[in-house]
Amino acid sequence: MKGNRTIILIAALLGLAAVLLFGAGWTLISAGSFHIEVHESGPDGCNFSITLPAALIQAVAACVPDDALAACDDEAAEEIARWWPVIESACEALAECPDCELVRVEGYDETVVVSTRGGTLCVAVDDHGDRVRVAVPVRTAANIVERLVPGA
Amino acid sequence: MKTKVILGALLLIITGANLAAAADQHWLHVRVEESGRHGEKVSVNLPFDLIEAVIEGVEVEEFDKGIVHIEDAEFDRKLVRTMLDVVKKADDGVFVTVEHERGEIVNVAKKGDELHIRIEDEDYEDEVVKVLVPLAVAEALLQGDEDELNLLAALRELNKRGPATLVQIESEDETVRVWIDKSQKGI
Image (cartoon, rainbow over all chains, first blue to last red; front, top):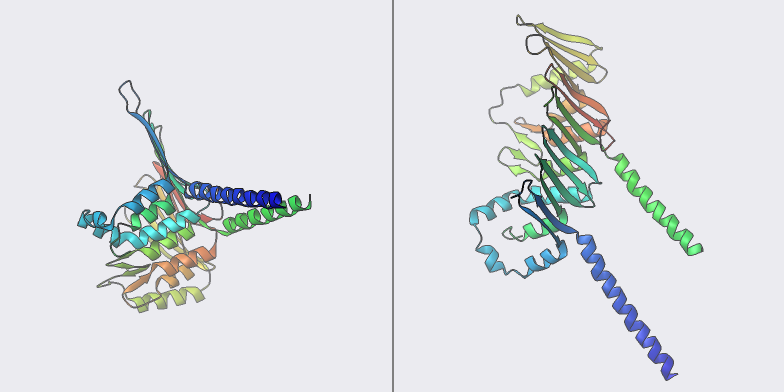
């Protein structure tokens, strides 16, 4: 009997751990990732690629004290506050938007594409062999920007 | 086995509901194509939900959540409303034809509940401009106070009407098309 109780207890603990891990993983995945990639053509070209989980950036931003944010450029904070309702509405609408190509500009040797994919705003620029890729999970980005809005 | 079937069915229903919701959405498309080997091409596809959300969020001096404030408006609103009412009740036909000395011809006609404006300019790259103005959209634009234009109401009316080509410009150098349909990529 005692042995059965122990097994049930261990199984319950393992199950709880599995649920917590699954929840953490789901949060991480659903928050998306910030991605920046730059490739410059030529021998001296700059090349780098950064991918950061949005949940990580959100967690770091949450740790920044409000005092530090208040010390930021007042003019910039005012502008953000002024346009915050538009930013918030646009981000919400973009997050709900089905995966699609919003804008494409094709010129001679240059292409710019803005698209949405799973709640992430993606910008791809190809210019004479140079390449820039940026991916921003819009909801997470909006949450981070909201911290800069005074009184939000 | 039963569980798998039920889960599979639920997944299908959820996917179908999402697809149906996406399919119901109207999209505003803009295409600009410049002719020539190095001509630039621009393609814009915007869901109406996104356009409405952005317009509703903008709150600046002359633009308040879709309402445009015009100070010292130079047009007589009552006159425009009266003209719209008259046009609505009138039979289909060409209302206005203006021919300029420089070769520009402007044509305004009514077809059903729409105003069709056509401008041909032989002197300027053989340009032909066609603009479609649904009368209901023009009326929605005039909703509100005397010094206001209700852009949001006009947009919603446009969304309600459904697929239509709103602007078409054809010249030697470029073609421009603005239209609404239910496809994400535009037909």
